[in-house]
Amino acid sequence: MRRLVIIGGLVLAAHAVCLAENWPNWRGPTMNGVANERHVPVTWTATENVTWKYGFLDFSGSTPVVWNDRIFLSAAEGTDLYLLCVDRNKGTELWKAHLGTGNAKVRKQNMSSPSPVTDGTHVWVMTGTGILKAFDVAGREIWARDIQKDYGRFGLNWGYASSPLLFKDALYVQVLHGMKTDAASYILCIDAQTGKTRWRVERPTDAVSESHDAYTTPALLRDGPREDIVISGGDYVTGHDPATGAEIWRAGGLNPDKDRNYRVVASPVVADGMIYVSSRVRPLIAFRTGGRGDITTSHKAWSTDQGPDVPTPASDGKFIYILNDRGLVWCRDAKTGVPLWSAQRIRPGTYSASPVIADGKVYLTSEDGVTTVIAAGPEFKILAENDLADYTLASPAISDGQIFLRTTKYLYCIGKRVAAGR
Image (cartoon, rainbow, N blue to C red):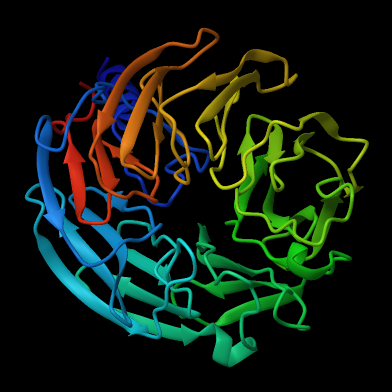
């Protein structure tokens, strides 16, 4: 009986964990824009349902990442770049670490665009200037790298913006460029504890001009015992062995007319045996997992010309939600691509933040600071429009039932914190 009680307690504890989670990277605990949360706020204003707001430095496309009682943010101030740590309960600054200089604005982004990543013990952060640093959660610097100094200048047309992927004890960093350099694109595997490079592999492409450039972030594919690092950009999506960097599979078709200006912003999404890869709007292609070699045709499941440019889609494995830059939203069956509803208009505006799914809802944030909340599932229904009236590039983060929204002026904590299991 005692053993049954213990086992039952462990099951309940596991269930509680799935109801209240950390948000350790820019696409959340599942890495596909899904929060397994309940009691997530639906309505708010700049003053209502706001637990606190923290005023900080400058605008950024970097998403806040959350672990227990700490929030980490990349930030810029003038020409300087910082990593900030904010108390999750009080909305006050715990510490600020200097990352380097050289910040510059390039169109709508600056050099603080890459989001940090954390495991709750350490936090790692990359800047658009190529500085990669590791800290403990108390703010003590553990190691630092200068990727441009080690491997050459970045050659992207609009500045570097990819976030590192943390998997097990390594960071995976991509540099996919070519508009302003003849140097090859490459992928790095860096030991998370020491900062030393484990491997560096070049990633070949026949892309031309700006189509070399990608502002995407690597994704993680788990397919049974197999684990692949997924990289998209330069007209292709590729899967790599985490231990060696060796290319396992590759798919094309993302730039069918070999356009010179097909740079890619939206990152790949992996969910329930599928890989969703965006291009510059047309096409978005869904591939089945499990392939080797050239999977362009053999593992293609479906495609659509109604893809996004900047916002990365979100999928729970059953549905995929696609938001374009102009505020049109599609919901498709994730496996077949069959539209459940198409081209539904939400608040007109420009959209750069990526959709987030939580508690049976989808959260869609415009650059004007308006978050439209719609019902998840096969029936399109707008539940709320929430206006913070401030320029917003960063995607929402959700943890313990609270929403963390970053605008130019503030980091907002929306709603009350929900204890695990409630």
